[in-house]
Image 1 (tube, rainbow over the protein chains, first blue to last red):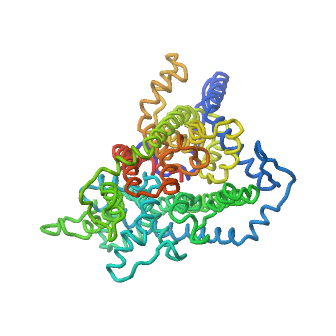
Image 2 (cartoon, one colour; image 1 turned 45 degrees about the vertical axis):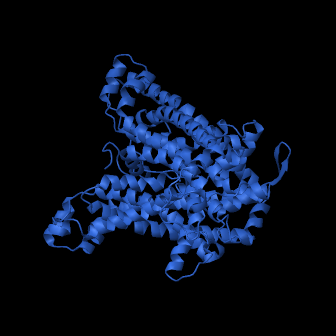
Image 3 (cartoon, rainbow over the protein chains, first blue to last red; image 1 turned 90 degrees about the horizontal axis):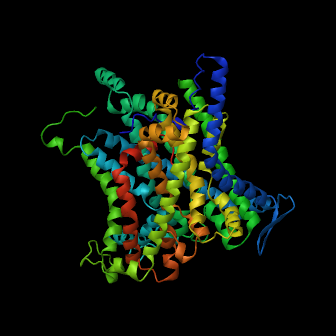
Length: 324
Length: 281
């Protein structure tokens, strides 16, 4: 399924060690190597300058805002003093505590469901004899869909008057609940919309991993007469673990920055029951103009993501190391 | 393959095919609902109980979306931003990916890790400072207010993808080009690029999709109606007018179809990109 020239999952593995320079005329070789190294920096410079200008400066500025007294002036912001106030404000704020809980809860539940469901879908499609290419192409459609449009679509489906979902509910005798009106149902509604859009993405990653598994172990298992479940747990799953781990990492990072979907579908409501950390930060800064605390929310969210990412890579590499 | 040979009716009616049909329905039903709503008459869009099949079929919503509302404008804006940003990402990403994949550049491992960190950094953390910066230089509500940030934020992932493809190209041809006296840019252009074409497709599609769907920065920097991209235009649609879902979904169908077609055509590149490592969230 995948182009053979691309090794699977290289991102999580350390870059290949440099080949030792072949012995050659030392002086000429060194000069050439140094030239090539300089060429490397020269060729990367344009990209790195653009990236640094647009990302490094704002990241530093956001951190500075989060530890200063920020006041908005006519021409921009003025930062004064070094203070931990912004962080102590958010830590003691009920909305922040809830947003943190909600974001973590949402991330755990949606990623768990998506990985479970996505793996099942991948296992099914892997056994499909005809039309697998078409099914994979179909899986890519929700992935490529604009999240905002996905949100509008579900908002329309959840409508209590003319929405299709309430209509189905009343057909099977569940009445016509105001789905987005109560906390529990709004959270479930949000998760359903997310699961529809991103499960196919997980399925594709897992399927691509499945297709690349070596065949010989399965043949041996068949000779030994091992059953389906046993084969899955003993052979497929252990080999698939790095692929699933990768899917989990990307989904967690994405889910933790949750913004587009609740912004349109629930506006963080009812009350602030679907307010994610990103929505809270956005509202604090763009609606309430509380720039200091807003920056503190945003920066602490980013910090959590970076720490989570580093921990994951460490654990993953340690695991890969013991298995190799 | 582990497909057991099946005979008779079991060739068609078996667990795998049944489950595939369920998967198919799971994905297609919401898409169907969007398309069906777009083709209903404006009055039937809000009918209660809802119409399961549009009858009569109507293209009035498409007419409204593009004549009464400015969805055409949003689509043009999205195309301009996404095409220019993708072109910039591919141009800069090719040079940087080549450098990181094929030259003994010192410190490239550190650079690659920093790039990875940037590509997972939550957008919300940088939106306000970027907003202030763009306001200072008078770029709010302009194409470059999105093109430059998109280029910067989606470059790291493209560099990773391209680097992986460059790593796999054999060194011999490059060396003979150098011996023949071709300069580095010439070598990249005529020796490396043709061999890395699948990588360029993959990086290009990922970047384009990311630009096409990005919401938070577009919402913060380009709120003016003349510069709204499709996601912003769609999200704010209900706020200004009485929401007409027929018009909204007619426009959405037009916005979803080109990218879906693109992904359909290049599905191999997309899948290999997904398995090659990462997708920006």
